Image (cartoon, rainbow, N blue to C red):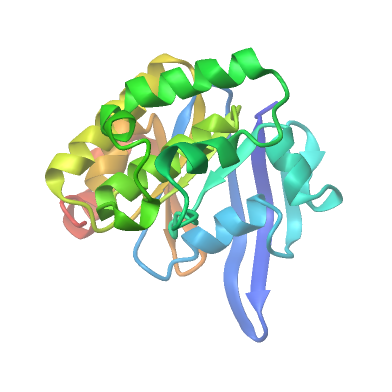
Length: 236
């Protein structure tokens, strides 16, 4: 059974339907990408998986329907969402923001291992551990948001537009971090408007347009697809 599965998911905002019959699955240890233009419904999909939006159809995490549990319990059970907005505490330091990611974990030794891992993954955060989040660059804040998500010890990590608005050198840093997380066997659902980035990292991808899944396949299959190549490759 896939660790994360959506079947015929519909989401509406009043009379506007944001998602239509969306079905996808993520197996343990995979990086699965969802690409598509701005306004396609990608964030709505992640919000629904995280338990923030009402939906019809089925969304199961580890075999349990997400609508039957709380968003907080989903996090405790290992489903962690790193949002596009980053949701950092602006007046907290880097270290304090990371601590907030581990606030519900009781094993101090395991938490310290997570600190060590995050600071090793992003040395820039280690250099700035006493700096307030609001004073950091956008790229550094993105590293911090990803690091805080990792402090929750995720089994499945959902990333919403992690490269949005970032300079190429910072995108390279995020890319290296994803490669290391992939080597660690972390399961990742990567939502990206930057299709080139998603194709580089995801093993399988779905194309979401106007709320519906229009294409799916392996990275090689989508990379060779004429429509994907003409409409999306190289678009950031």
